Length: 293
Ligand SMILES: NC(=O)c1ccc[n+]([C@@H]2O[C@H](COP(=O)([O-])OP(=O)(O)OC[C@H]3O[C@@H](n4cnc5c(N)ncnc54)[C@H](OP(=O)(O)O)[C@@H]3O)[C@@H](O)[C@H]2O)c1
Image 1 (cartoon, rainbow, N blue to C red):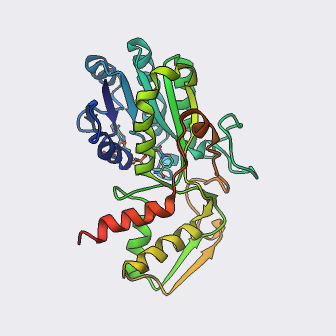
Image 2 (spheres, rainbow, N blue to C red; image 1 turned 180 degrees about the vertical axis):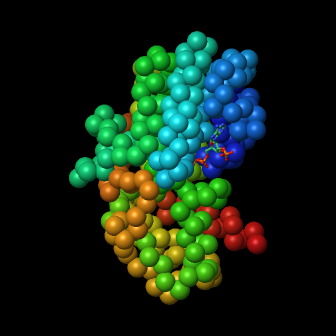
C-alpha cells in the first residue's frame, strides 16, 4: 500500500513519520519544499504521478490570527487546495485522510459537539477549514476527515512549548481560563490515523467526519497547570504564580470558541480508537526533551 503524507514537516506530519516508520507501508513524504499546496496545477500533477492508495493531508494554513488579514492564502491552502486534492483522490480512487479543527464551531454549545452538529466558524481560519471539509464531502472521494483540537507535541510551535519557554522567563504567568477545549497529543492523532489505514478498505461506508481529541476537557489555564506540574517534576523552573484570566483580558485578532469540546464516540464505535490521554502526552514530550539533555 502506498501512502502519501502532505505537510510532512509540520507538527502532525513529523508525528506521522514517527508512527509510519514502524510500518511496512511504502510512504512518500512531501513538505512545502517538495510541493506547494498553493500551486494547484502542480499539486494535482504530482499526486497523480505518485498514484497513492491513501493521501494523508497534514498540511494547512494554521496561523489563526494572521488568517484574519490573509484570507486569500488561508482559503487557497485550506479550501481550494483541499478541493483539488479531493478531486484527484476521487479520480485515482484513493482515500483522503484530512485533518480539520474544532474552530468550525462557534463555541456556544453546552455539551460536547458531535460530528453532525451545526457548524458556525467565528474566524477566517475556521471558515476556510470548514470549506475544505465541504469540498471533500462534495467530491465523492473516499475520505476520513478528523476534526481535532489544541494540538501539542515535541515538534513545532504549540501551547506546551510556549508555556515551557515562558516558564523559564516569567515569575507570573496569566493564562486564559474561560475557554474550554480538549488538548490532543499529536502522536496520538498520528497513531489513530495509522491504526485506521489497514481498516479503510473494509470501511468504505464509514467515509465521513470523525472527532478525535483529548479525553478530559479543560481550560488553557488548567492545561498550563498540568504542564507546569509535570515540568516541576522534571526539575524545571516554573513561574511563582499562574493566574487565570478571561478572554477579554487577552484579546486576539481572531475570535476563539469559548467551548470547543468534541465528542469522540463515533471514532471509538467505528474504529475502536480511544481519545488521547493528554496528561500522558505531556509526560512523554517532557521526557523526550529533558531526559535526552
Ligand atoms: N495545531 C493545532 O492546535 C490544531 C488544532 C486543530 C486542528 N489542527 C489541524 O491539524 C492539522 C495539522 O496541524 P499542525 O499543528 O501539524 O500544523 P503545522 O505544524 O502548522 O503544520 C502545517 C504544515 O503545513 C505546511 N504548509 C502550509 N502551507 C503550505 C503550502 N502552501 N504548501 C505546502 N505545505 C504547506 C506547513 O509548512 P511550513 O512549515 O513550511 O509553513 C507545515 O509544515 C492542520 O490541518 C490543522 O488545521 C491543528
